[in-house]
Length: 451
Ligand code: PLP
Image (cartoon, rainbow, N blue to C red; front, side, top):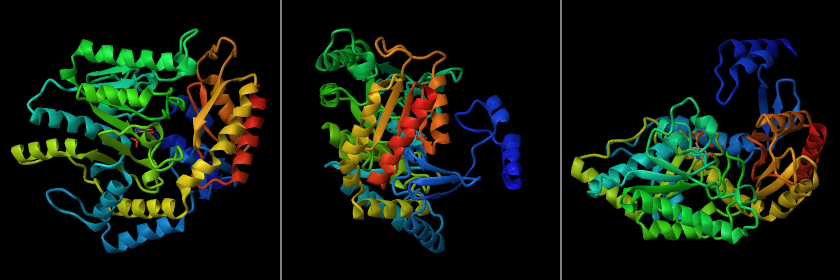
């Protein structure tokens, strides 16, 4: 370790409070400090090279050294480094990005509200639906449906929608009215002898039973990720999303597709809803929107939602909601350039073209004694580790073996993320065939070392 890294690590231990970290363990083991990035690779402060198999946090679509994003940020910094959109003010980057997102989104989704993060976006969606339903004279229509293992953020309201134990335990969540439905993951939650379509039918019946028991007039929205990410990369069973869409239409429930991870090509389609054949009322996007070079999230909504909110803002005199950074000009300028790169380089097509190599290569690990299931679509995948393949029994304590495997992967030069029992992969959309071969090779070595 050189002096700089020693002092950096010591300063980190002395002063930083890390998200998603066992802080006492961190004080003993210290940080892994990343010094620079280049394409799909990052380098730590000792110069060790890693393939960033999770694109940072599922986000760096165009890779870690894209000069066009830097230039877009600098240009905007020079021109107008900050402005806002409160009370009729506007600026070109937010206007142009809103226009671009409406063009990319499914037919009829024409309006965009910006926040700084996915959590703020989902908080905003909750408030929008409450504001909308109060305006429509149905103040009892306030509850949400979400799913176990879903991830929608960590603020008090978005964290309530999240269905993961670590985000609830000792945080006193959920704090808003939300029912978490069965996780739509057939391999884990399908019953003995049940087919995939029977599983889908059971989950749809469960959703309808909950809607009827609570009263459709009390349910404002249903939120879900087309492919669940942070809960462990779970792909939905056949027919699930069109079935959910039909229920939402039947009971006048707003359907929210949380595409913070899925959006902008991750599944080989522009949005996840396109992949699974449904049209939401609200699309929540972030991460790959700017490749996370700048914090930004966008809520794209249809006219039904927009008009109800607009009408109530007229009645009350304002829509009393917004962040200082909503539609930050530098973030929006970077987002516009990032989407231009995704289009020009056909990175969505790249994800579709490489799907077979990536998913097929990883599926070979299904034979590994540690691996219960390999799943995924496009350029997102999860390997769920089990103590016993036949019974699908997980290791105890939960997550310990997957954490160990992720450490071995890093040792072998691959960063992946251990989420509960699953090793998640979600490489930058610019990956090449050669990068994928290396990801698979390094993952294989990590699994063998763990075993
Ligand atoms: N929604 C989904 C699907 C996510 O994956 C995430 C973050 O990973 C969020 C919301 C929250 O986003 P943020 O971390 O920007 O608050």
